[in-house]
Amino acid sequence: MIVVGAGPAGSASAMVAARAGLSVVLLERGPFPGSKNMYGGVVYGRILDDLVPRWYDEMPVQRWVTRRSTMVMDQDRALTVDFRAPAWGRQPYNGATIYRPDFDAWLADKAVAAGARLVTSTTARELLMERGSVVGVATDRPDGLLRAPVVIACDGVNSFLAKQAGLYPHTESSHFTLGAKETLALPKELIDQRFGVRGREGVDIEIIGATQGLAGGGFVYTNLDSVAVGVVVGVDELSKAGLRPEELIARLKLHSAIAPLIEGAELKEYSAHLIPEGGYKTMPELCTDGMLVAGDAACMTLAAGIWLEGVNFAIGSGAVAGEVAVAAHARKDFTAASLGRYPKLLEQSFVLADHRRFQDAPELVLSERVQTAYPAMVCDIVERLFTVTNPTPKPGLRRLLRTAAKNNGVKLRDLARDGLRGLRTFG
Ligand SMILES: Cc1cc2nc3c(=O)[nH]c(=O)nc-3n(C[C@H](O)[C@H](O)[C@H](O)COP(=O)(O)OP(=O)(O)OC[C@H]3O[C@@H](n4cnc5c(N)ncnc54)[C@H](O)[C@@H]3O)c2cc1C
Image (cartoon, rainbow, N blue to C red; front, side, top):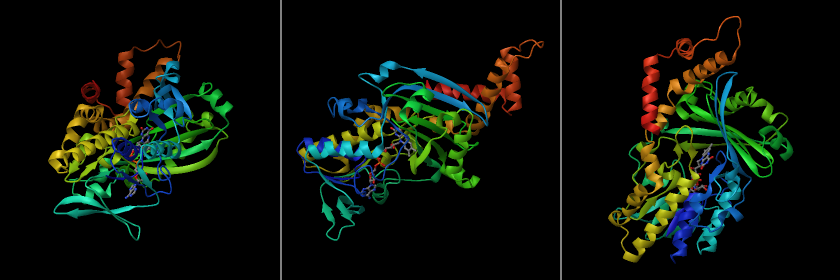
């Protein structure tokens, strides 16, 4: 079996197949797994329960997220819903901030320990096809043709392999967002004080309204002695606005709710990456004769407003792809019909169940009202609610809502309709 890409999806599928006794090659174009990869910063590790016993004892964690905030901001105001759960800092844990080069290398080591052969600095250039079936890959090495009865494409967003196999009916730029982040060094004690955490406790702040009216969002994550600040923005919107992502990050860093948290921090790294945010409706076909597609290569990042999760979906789909490849070997049948168990199993697992359930979320969350009008409206209401203007008496909530809606160009009918859509989407 050939696995292309040693990200979370590739390493999970290589690990599962190698453990079952298959001969597995895991190709990675970077000099080591994770060297090419970036993300916001939180891995939800419970997906590893069955794959790596006591993963939490060895995973290269920066901090365990025990505080999760959702912030709604406009130009200079912010309202935060702040949730703290100290239990998330103990077994069985929830999310952890981790650097991707550390995490991807750790997970790939598990695949290697299971018997997979990791080949780095090697790019799969194209699929080898015979009679319409995938039978291997051509790599960029001089002696680089590799043959195998099954290839698992885990080559991430914008998968050239899935496209070459004709599995993508369409790939509009509107289905993708660009994520960009700065990693800012700050001493651990300052992070602990400013974010109100101790020891290995960490913070995840997801932000709506952080992108100057463009469809997207923002985030702040704490590592042990650095803070990640970033934005996620629609590719189309960004190009139309003529803005650069680093300008959006610069503005976010100046916001009154963010600036005090990162004052004096030193920029260590800037990175950016595409995200396949279109969700369920934009996924490719997941298998063809001789090939399966997993993780971001199959658009499996769940970007549903309050959630931005992809690593767990990549591991979940990669592991199932590995299992299906093992079963196909046992049957010596690598046709699309035999590999068709893969999408069926994914439909039964959280991977496609979550995507199916939240398939309308991207459209709703990235709509102009949710991105711009509602954050300003919420801030207006809260500001008026807490501004004491005696001797004028306090206004009632209904009047506050009506005034805030009017001032921000929101029709109450649209508000009600979006509320219902929200209930249907997330309910
Ligand atoms: C800004 C941002 C923030 C995010 N935040 C989060 C978060 O906080 N939590 C979360 O769970 N998810 C997050 N995600 C999503 C997450 O990063 C992805 O869903 C996840 O990395 C997908 O894993 P993967 O293995 O499918 O693909 P990738 O991680 O992209 O791995 C693909 C691998 O394939 C290699 N490769 C590509 N092409 C070839 C080739 N032709 N030959 C050989 N090797 C190749 C690449 O070098 C890479 O190592 C975020 C993403 C971004 C961009």
